[in-house]
Each structure stands twice: as structure tokens, then as C-alpha cells.
Length: 238
Image (cartoon, rainbow, N blue to C red; front, side, top):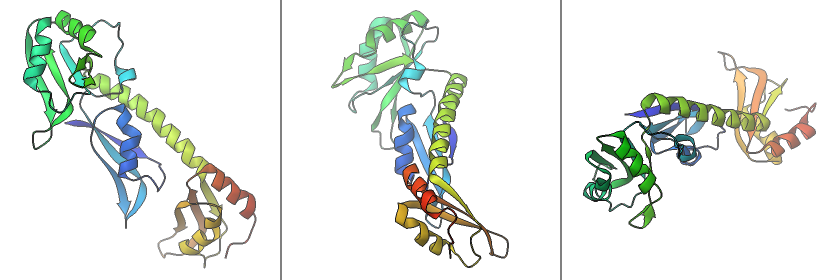
């Protein structure tokens, strides 16, 4: 089971690949989806994170007291096995469980969990193994956060990220009104495309598919949008 988040108000140029790149810094992603209609983005989508995962700088305070016994590990080589983890961590006293996350075909995902019988052993393991080289990589080891903690922290991070996305799109999204009923979305694009790359153009219409004279044009950058405003504001669009 993972954490599902709805991401809204992003540009039409954002596909599932870009969505993955934008949010993978916050943790390991199980899946993501950009909602589309007729092949075009509707400006929102979903990202599903694995339980207990969060950006390193947000989730681990080195000097914090560790009271839990379950630790989270990541940045591990593909050939690191649960047996090897047991060998490396058993010096910190008795381990109750080791689990490495795997793909359907059994291939390691590069992260996992190790659970000790007492908190002191878990703290010693963090102090000794976080940043320790295991195989060819420096592994990351920290307390595995509880579901409620992750939900709160991830919510705060996503709220900040969404506000940033909204601010960016507001600067590049133009509101156009008083356009003639004969103007369709193709004609609208023709008028505005000379100022830059358009990610979406939408004319608001009523149930009878008659233009209300209102539309939105979204560019890839705020600079392009500003140029269009400076040139076309007050001009006739037909």
C-alpha cells in the first residue's frame, strides 16, 4: 500500500515522465499518472509513493533520539541480498526481520527495511551504517517513519510544491475575453503561437457549443505570455 497524492494545475507539457522527475526527489514512487482526454493533459494527475518514504533532508535528524526499532535503507546495489544485510547489521544485536523491496520478477528495487528487537540497537545501526559503503554504493539508513508522520510531512512538501507550480502556471497562463463567436481554438492558437510555444488553448462554451467569448491560452514560459499580452491586449481577434 502506498500514499496517493493528487497533483493539480500543471501545464499541458507535463507528461508522466516529467511528473516522475518532479516528485521522485521526495521518495520512491510506485506509480504516477497524468490524466488526459483525447491524448491531451487535463492539467492534473496522481503520484503514489511507497509507505514510509520521504526526502532525506526532511525525514532524518541525525541527533534525534531513536525510539523505534524499524530502519529504512536505500541506495543499495541490485545484488545486495537480505542475507548480506543480516551479516552487516547483526553486530548491533539481534535482528527480528529484514526485507528488501523487489520487482515482480524478484529484482531488487534498491531499498528495504531492517527491524531490531530494541531501540538502542537500531540507533547504533543508524550511527554506524548511514553513509557506510556497501558494495559499490554509500547506503542511506534512517528510522522508518510511521504512516502518520509521513502523511503529514509529505502533505506539507506537496503543498509547497503545488503552490510553486500554481505560481509558475499563473504567470504563463493568459485569460482572453471578448473574442468573436466565430473564433475556434485553432484560430486562437494561430493568433498566439507567434509569441512562443503554446501548451494549451481552451475556449469556454455553453451547452450548445457556442463560444462565450472567454478563453485561456497557456505558454511554456511567463516571458512568452508577457510578450503576447504586450502585443495583443486591446487588439481584435478574428
